[in-house]
Every structure is written in C-alpha cells, then in structure tokens.
Image (cartoon, rainbow, N blue to C red; front, side, top):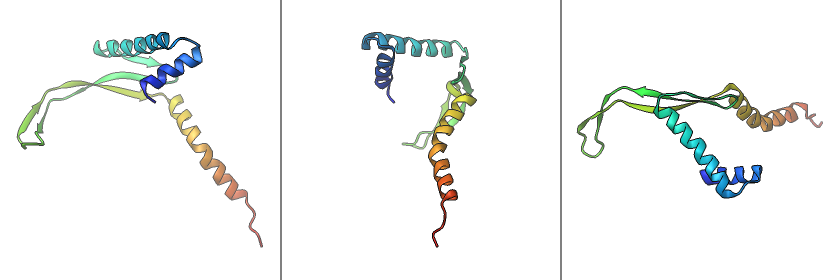
Length: 111
C-alpha cells in the first residue's frame, strides 16, 4: 500500500474529499516525524509503537574504493508491532492453512 492508496482509503471510508484526506494523512505522518525528532515515543494501542534507537559510530568501507570510512552515530526510527497487530496478521494468514489441514484430516480414504 502506498501513501496515495492510504489517502484514497481514508477518503472512501470517511466520505471526505481527497484533499481533506491528504491533509489528515500528512498531518499524522508529520506528527510522528516531529515526535521522533524530539526523542518522544509514539504508542498507538492495538497497532504498535514508534521510537528511535541510537546507532554507535563505526568504521565502514567505501564499496567503490575499499577505503575505510568513519560512520558517525545516528538515530534510527524503529517500529515495534503490538501483540494485537501480530495476532491479527498471523490469524488471517493461518486461516487457509488451518482450513486445508482440517479438510485433509477429516477426509475419508476411499477403498
């Protein structure tokens, strides 16, 4: 799903204009980015949490020349899904497998 798809979905479900939906989606994304920049944690119950993790400085290599390069420390955005989100994703993906397993276990062999 792309950002445009998300805007379209909000527009359709909320019965808003595409422009209004775009403002809503942009506002949410901007709010998340602003909070992460200031070091805040964003927690959306039933969905997950966003936070930043600090990466330590390290020595890397330039792939073109092979020279050593000092990589400075930096903050990396990190998303941790909630248990509910994990269960919803796994529950939907297990339905076809569970149905197939159940069908094969209840099938009677023909003699």
